[in-house]
Length: 201
Image 1: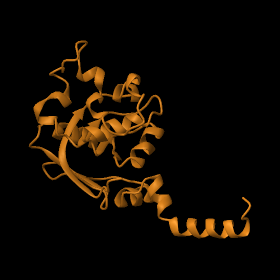
Image 2: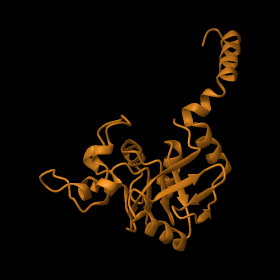
Image 3: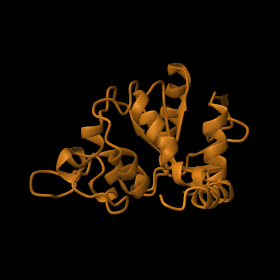
Image 4: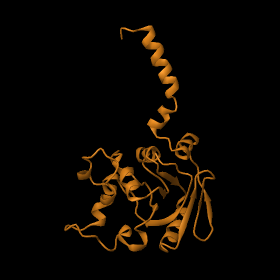
């Protein structure tokens, strides 16, 4: 998993509340177990019309936001079903950080396990960043995980809280497998000892 330390990038505004995981990645795209290739279908029903053509007014179809790495969203982002494909699709598109007043718990935790930082800020601070992101590609927001700050393009800085263990994992690029692999020497030693003690197993 890619480490998350400091990110300065284009922020795309998505001023919608209760964006559920089916809006993020519709159910017909859940057949794959691969983490790649889902970005093209991120927000599929909002990005494309019935003929598969891009809807020009949708934020991620606008030229200034095609390379967005940060998404500024409304309350209760990621609600609905618990599909891990939702953070996969965001990450595959290029989104490394979401900023919102609140998230659904399962989506929030899945983000950390897939290298995305979900930042929680009060509504009034999200409103400031939402307005900032509406300036387009020239307005770049900086997210510093180590310092736990978000800085707008004009220098306003907001602090956020994050669980210490989740922070450690993101800073070091550790998903669940990576955490297990940190203990590989102890695991190997245990297995060798168990095999010697019970060779018939």
